[in-house]
Image (cartoon, rainbow, N blue to C red):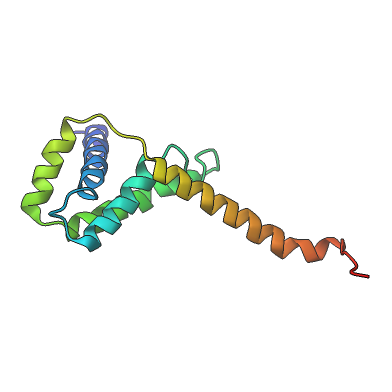
Length: 132
């Protein structure tokens, strides 16, 4: 098997695992710690907006290549094996959902970063308001 074939199989497995985690976050049989992590990973992975946009060289793909797979590994370790297998089978036949929660979280992170950046830079601009 060539390296390209292995990468394609890995990418397909990641897609199935993300949907399985999305299902796990809603399944009452999943422990609450696993639900929390699975929900966070699925919300971020299924969000059409990234915290680090893909057009930023190198950094833009780090979340897709490192952060999401690490989150998947950690979340799947918290879910019982038999239940995870059942969720993966259910996920294999589903269309990939879009996470509205992920969109809200990413936008909130961007707004918070912009607010903090503005707060840090504002005193350096020399623009002050007198309270006379």
